[in-house]
Structures are given as C-alpha cells and as structure tokens.
Length: 259
Image (cartoon, rainbow, N blue to C red; front, side):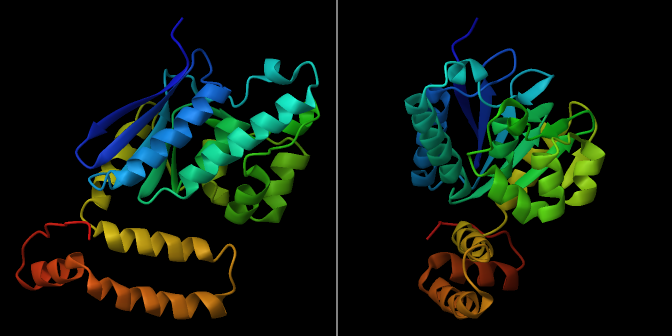
C-alpha cells in the first residue's frame, strides 16, 4: 500500500494534483498539510497559471475524511483536523490562478468540499456527490455549508446537507454544482484542456478577475464596483497589459511575463 500523498506533476503552465490514498483517497492530516503547502508553493511559481485536481484510480475522486480518526470522540483531534481541513481548502480557494476539479468518481464529504473550493468542477457521468456528515453526527467543516449554498442556493444545500441527498452528475449539472459533465474517464482531459485555455489569458488579469468575482461573497456590490475600476487602472502598471493589447492589434499570440 502506498503512502497517502498529494502527487504533483507539471505540464507546461498547468500543475496537476492527484489525491493518492487508496482505495478511496481519504484525507489525512498529512495530505491536508501537503495540499496547503503545495498550493502555496504553486502561488510562488509564476510559470503556473492553473491547476487540475483529481483522484487516483477510477472509482473515487475522494471519500473525504477517514472516520476512524473521529471514532473515539476526541475533541482535541476534532479541533486539529477541522483547522487543518479549513486551512488547506481555503488555501486552494485563494490560489492565484484557476483551479479545476476533475471529479472522476465518488466525491463525498471532504471529497466534495475540496471540489467546492475549486473555481470550476468537471464531473464524469458516473460520479456521485454528497455531504453526508450529518448521517454520522457531524457537519461539513471545511467550507461545505458556505460554498455549497453559494453555488446552488439554500434549498439544494439544505437538501444535500440536512436531508442527506446524494446527487448524480446530471442532477449536479442541472443545479449548478458542476459546470460540465463528461463521459467516464474523460474528466481529466476535459479539465486539462480548460486549464490550458487559461494560458491564453494574462495571468495578472486572471488573478485580478478571480479576486473580484470572489469579493461578491463577502462585499456588497457598492464596494466591489469601485475596486473593479481601481484594479482595471492598476493593470496599466503591468507589462502584460501593453503586451496583450499590442499582440491583439498586431494579430499575434501574446507572450505573457506575468507582471
């Protein structure tokens, strides 16, 4: 049996993170810390514009936390794990580039929460998604209650969390939980294709746009609109702005310098 890990490979401007903890790619304290550290390292690598997150194997994206960790009811363990979960998934949400979850199988509990922490979700047609924590006397503590409600609205968030409803990929697409459904085995290729499209955009502009979109969760529009204009003007301090406009006018591909 392999050691649980977050495997990192890089293809061009895309980082590929694979959750590797067979058989169900469950989260451990070590893998959560590894995820946070990996994302922070990628933030410092200006050559990386996007990341794709997927699960090892064909059956599971991730089944979430290993419940054996909580079997003895130790509150200290609960406090530590919830903190580590939160720090890891919040780091993913704050990733400078674009994060895409390639949901290649079951995404349960913390396995769905990590997908919710990404910018975009692509699910395979056989994938199933749920936040079943309340069935075992727990709750989603890694952003699930907030991110799910933000994406799909209160009603469906309550159906999934309070009623324990498990969704298949087609229903997840219908309610806006995922942005695309593809055939079995094709989520990674679809996610990688989308991630490569990001390289056609200015990384500096993408980062600014992402931060503005996410401001809508915490700030009223009256605050975000002036910031939008401010960041627009700020882009004129960057080489990418001049390169992007001139590349378009000269009908050539832009050569981003990420600054």
